[in-house]
Length: 244
Length: 353
Image (cartoon, rainbow over all chains, first blue to last red; front, top):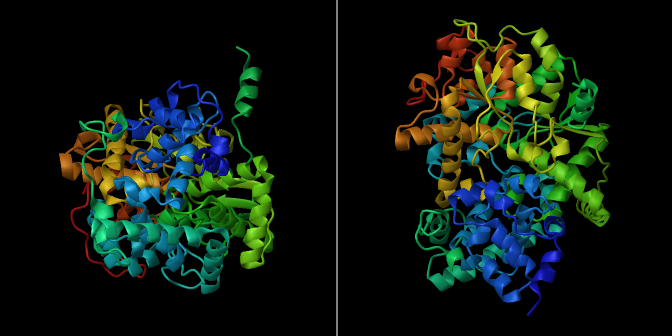
């Protein structure tokens, strides 16, 4: 088996993010995720710096590495110049490369993000765009959102937008040549391969779970990973993974 | 007191912001949710302040939301951003103006990464050339668009039609400023005032006559959390963090929340609606919700622009209580009209109506 700590050190974010942790716990004190989830960045960083391969595998398969919101408040406060958020990002990347992410409920959600934000990048040249924020998936957007979608041409025209238009302006149509360049960048830098890895491992997991897997945002596996919450994640839940 | 010493210390918290000739890059969220804000910025810069701001329609997302939700590898985002630098170089610009705090944080992170790991810079140059045939230079000056409005805050104050003062009482309005985590928490030197004394928004509020509210959770995250919002099953994290901030600011009777980051602006607006629906809670005075404005929207109001041309009616929390306090005259009949004056349908169930 490969040494996972060595693999992590290949990620510059890991090299920047973990020098030596003295376990003071300031990162946990400042962390918005630690207030909500049963999550303790100090424990994760300490476990990683132990270099225990078996423990790092468990971590790569666990929900806990997916609780961070990447606000990076920890970077400001660590007295030793570590960034637990960067350590988390390196762990998440490795978990996906090795296919371990599908072993946790929170990790499996990566497919939903790839199918929404990821595919928006290729289709539109934007991570998010007005027409790609579906009110069914986003009820918190409230009635103004359905209104804007129903009247988007008029709304954008009054505000100086360029909705799907040619030229400059908010939500202009990104020229095809620019979309082609973006796709080539993904191809050359490993971004496309990374998307494919997320799909492949998710398909394998869907088969194992006996859930229908196809494309888009309406197959059973997408809906499962997008909506499932087993209720064992937050500080108010009685049983949590990190207690084990 | 040794004021010279204090000035010297404060100088460490300043950043250099270019004066003119900007290459402008848009924000996925700001242009989708606040298109009027981006257009007001350009209008202000070009037509009021007479500055040169160039936009190339071929610039794309920086992929930052994908990067911070861990589906976009670091080599990919570095190369996408390098392509933006290449477009800038090709157009002859050296100063970049960024409309999004997530993007701004990433541009800063990537420039720092290239400094510490020159091999990453070399690799990025190679990737970009291989994918597009383009080459790039490192920008001479990197600013968030709020930095630029901050720089010109006194010029805006000199042209103000409205100050941030309650017209009836004569008291300054109580304004919460929220600068967004990725503006200066990651790389404090990239933000005005650093991580400890962020001044980008409070400087605008001071210059335009308002009162900045200090409250316990002033620097707490808005709750976005990237994957914690993007996936429906995780949104409890997002709304809980927003609720924490609003509960903390409520005793200080905020009249307005002013935001730096378009994501924060959207979440602090939408989650107020959600919390009201779920729990019946509101956080403003008199049982109202607190209007949340972008710095462009606020600058537009200060300069006397028609609020409905700025797009503040397309928030969930409506701003009429704020407009009345400011003494801004507005035409309710113009609120939901098209550019050429035709009446649109009226949206239902908005807040503060």
